[in-house]
Every structure is written in C-alpha cells, then in structure tokens.
Length: 165
Image (tube, rainbow, N blue to C red; front, top):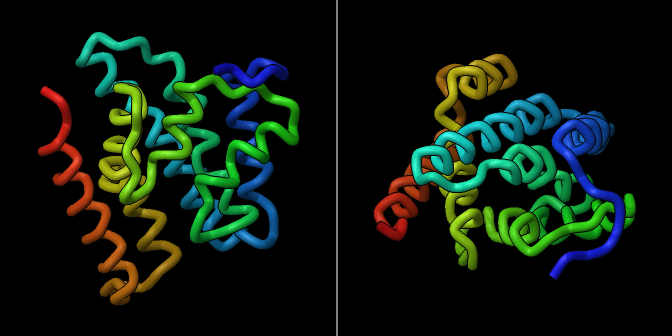
C-alpha cells in the first residue's frame, strides 16, 4: 500500500534527516546519526547489488530510518513514518518495512527490509563511524559504548546467519 503524498527522493530524504539531526534535543548524537544514516544506505545498496536486487530505496531509507529519534529514543522507528507523513511524503510498503523493522527483535516482511536490517548493524564497523565514536567519547571506551558495539556486532552476525539463502 502506498500512502499518497509527495514522492520522496534521496536528496530530499538527506535534507530531512540532516535538518532533524541538527535539532538541539538530539544534537549530541546528530553527527553520529548523520554518518550512520548515510552508511546504512551504502551498505544496503552493496548487499542488494550483490543479490541482484534494485537498490533505489536504500539511500532514501538510510537517510530517514532514524529520524524518529527527534521524538522518541526507545521507539524511534515507530515515529519516522509519522514524521514523513507530517511533511506530506508518501511511504510505500518497502520503505515502511525498512524503517519500521530495522531495529532489534523486528521481523521485516520484504527482502529489502531484511537487507536493510542487516545493513543497519553492519554499518557500525565503518571507519568514519568509529572515528566519530572516538572523537565524541573516551578511550578506552566506556562500558555503554562497548555494550552498544557488542550488541550491534552480535545482532549483525545473528541476522547474517538467519538471512535467507
């Protein structure tokens, strides 16, 4: 099902995300979220290309999947779609699946959603993301940073093992 509204393209998705991430209430995570969002889209596109799947949706999904952090930290994925709808953008089933199911414990319905979920976790191992974590945090890393990295890597490997062959 496609929600009617303006058609979201990657440049508009990027602008929306960067504007939201620059807001004061999430400014401390804004740089991380900006780079993470771009990297998730890139990783998802690489996986999709390898599988011969259309890559068009992944850059858009990458940029907007975490915009819900502006409204709610714990359930951020649930708030991204309403934000897009408030901005009068249409959301198709595949984009919705990527956004709503990228987090832990979710079950994407589409192959694109499954790819996106894996990419969300694998993207954390990008050198630019690690550089931001080191710049904005301490070294050695604090326990909560280490726990985050452990969770992301563990989830990435679990998702890869369960990925349909």
